Length: 261
Image (cartoon, rainbow, N blue to C red; front, side):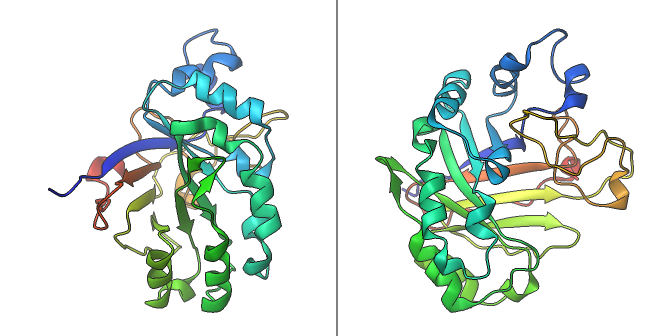
């Protein structure tokens, strides 16, 4: 009997100033926001790990705040992926993975490796990067997802390499970046359709563990597509679906249904 993949529909981050008055209960302290948010969705992508380094006690706290069955998807640090020669990322990768991510234990979901829109596909160099991806960290199994943003990746060689090294390809439903659909054992989907309304995008504050620098509140969503959910209820403009299967090589993520767009 073929094992079925599990779909988790989550959101990116949980520390956003506009949510203090819309999503979270009144007077809820910042320290309790993850505890609350992790009980509204089954998965959260941590964007802060892309920009900053965190230590093991932070991951231990996150794991303790989230309920059983919850999954964090960590975005790999930018110093790993934002480089001319990907095959030279080994030291930075080990520094990131060795920072304490294994403390999440069973709550550690896919590691998202996001590449810059200017990064072009070079088969030899990209394979050198994939060879660096470890299967475990401190005894905890690792799952890797690749989010590429250049049209040069729309070639058969790219998904072939991903399958060879058991890495998922993120299917990004984006107005600008390529959408590459494959069927690895772990799949990830990002829905980034622009909306026609003004939404309160996040402003990164000093000391914030999540959020994206450079975002301003009140930006019109139809002026530039956003991959950040303005409010998690309902999740219309942005969400990530992660399909997990431990045995089936044909697990897929379906395209989001109409209400998501």
